[in-house]
Amino acid sequence: MSTGRPAASDGGFAGGAVPSGADRGIAPIALGLNRPAERPYRGGAGILRFRGIRPSDASVDDPGADRMPEDFVASATEVFAGGGVGLTVLPDGTRLRDAFDAHPIDYFGEAHVAAFGADPMLLVKLLNTGERLFVHFHPSTEFARSTLDRVRGKTEAWIVVDTDEAGYAYLGFRRQVDEEELLDWFERQDVDAMLAAMNRIELAPGDTLYVPAGVPHSIGPGITLVELQQPVDLSILVEYDGFPGLDRRAALLGLEPGVAFSDLDREPLSEEPLARLASWRPVRTDGDAQLTALFPPDADALFRADRIEVDGAYLLPADFAVLVVTDGEGELGWAGQAIPLAPGQTILVPHGAGATVLRGALGVLRCRPPHPEAHSPSGGR
Image (cartoon, rainbow, N blue to C red; front, side):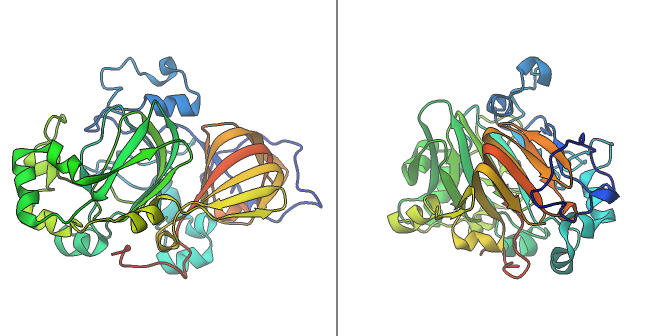
């Protein structure tokens, strides 16, 4: 199996060694930047800031550096245009997608593979907006399969880690929008009318939003967030004017407007369901850690995320996970080895590494695929 080989330390688990696949080279992997270029909106500086990377170390002097607003983390997903762009490459040069295919049990465990094969069922991104992101939505799985010949659609969820100033996003319509009105907005690119009909939500670090497929949305400038999503790069744009590389055909994925917008949720998103999407955060204490569930139960059928705040040590059972360190310092230990942890790090944890332990005083986002028994093939719609 192709993995990184972090340096060993004298750190171990209290009470003796924990069984794992470390003797077969199965180990957590610290991941570097994986930023597709020439994306249609500006951003990316917040990713470097969050990761603690100096701009000079990330080639931001390149003329296209401000068009790299996303960091695909532990990715087996290509951008819509394909060509391998977006795929994570491991330290030894192996594409992670190929490693998944070659060693699915080692990465995901038997239950996941029995349900999903070598498909991770998850894409985690870091995303930073240098401008307001266009009004758009993501197709449902049903629409993607029937109309776009794709395996799945895209529901996503956000965890805000930083904002330049007063952050905001638009999510869902405030009122019923009929088809003729929507088509008129699109043809005239009447962005003011689009935004006026949507719910504006103020965002601050720590806030979360669950964004089901079909719900229109736009993210304001200066937002840095961790995004969990179904693993596909698939968007239909209501707004495209003024964004380089975008035109009418690209905005609609080559479809006619009436077909493309048939999957858009034009119903009003009222206060109660909106609050549920934005404020689901039950907390429980487990030993030296406080665990916060970040998204509504509906999300569990597609992906799972919790925030783990550790002051001491907290044991994580064997599971496939992507960890994103948000604050503090510590380490991730397993079978006598450890990776030092600091804000901005992203760690891929294979199931076969066995139990791992978080030590120190730190906050970590644990991002996981759906539980095999909870998965919804419909993709939430």
